[in-house]
Length: 484
Image 1 (cartoon, rainbow, N blue to C red):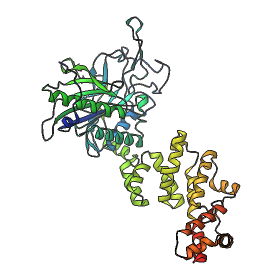
Image 2 (image 1 turned 45 degrees about the vertical axis):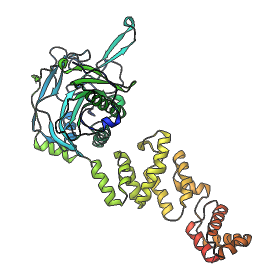
Image 3 (image 1 turned 90 degrees about the vertical axis):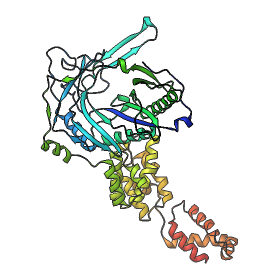
Image 4 (image 1 turned 135 degrees about the horizontal axis):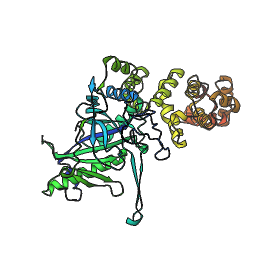
């Protein structure tokens, strides 16, 4: 019987309990065709135009495994440090739903493609392959005006399900785990993980127990969480709900629940007594899946550098702080961009500052990704080199960069066109200093009388008269010498 709805417990009550959370993440693989047929997997095509007898489940149609989907599943398993099974088997998972035309899903049950992995400190129970169901859409609110539509374009699209151990202890940990998992899968080009398109979906199993207790509590499953923020909200609510039930003397019932994004609450969908009996049995139309050592190692050899390894390398090779390395490896494209700027400029810390600061800020304001940056890595490296060589002041570089971003022109081109090159000619700067000292005798006497802060006044005046183009180091040296 489903549990009675209650208010969420008070924070002091929640603090006495420890949540236990495991996540089941469904990931759409980045293949051109479906798992068991040649239909395309393009998103956004007109409904029911990417279908064939196989993915429609018509009588007599036989599935044929997509080799690339298997390779991507193995790649994900290797990145998650899983043991790839040399022998795995597909099974029929039987249940009825309007957008499941076969009346069963082809999945893997007791013999998945991989198991026993780890991501950070979180264990991975298994990785298995399966085909996706179609999509139902509902319209209308009055009984007489309600319509339901079924689009089977997604039916048969290849998925992997990544099941974690119940190692997560807070909604924040679950959020961080899912963020790291998404980053990893994007790095190895297994999936785009675009949650708006349903390429990454998550179910959460959550229970609570008094702190110090060894035995797990009864879990509830919260299904179909399609954003990281909703995941965290749903877990926070469900943890508070379960604590409130237990604190009120009630019992948690094992059930499946749905998260209502409008109310921020979970609601019972079905209890354990009414849960599906999937009646798994081996898929008779598919041979067992055999992955040889040679194929597994060939896939491993093609693996790109993983985020954690890239972060370590950036710190060691470029001497940048760990925080910088973390930000610069958020995506593979961002890491590649930074590395090219650092290599070409020879100034890794300056490159890091420009990429994390001015470039990232400009891209965000323009709603662009690093791949669409109007300023190439070569152009940004040239700007960094001009500053390092003393040909541009940092202040001028900050003024030139927005012009580079707006026009796509190189820094040197903008400097030449606008006459912005840094002035390092000592003779020219000395003349300006002499004129300023003659025009400001009072400030000269104040400096010589011990008020060293007056130096800033003269520096500002020199920079003003040169439109910020005077070399600051040369200005300071000449002023100190002449004033002193």
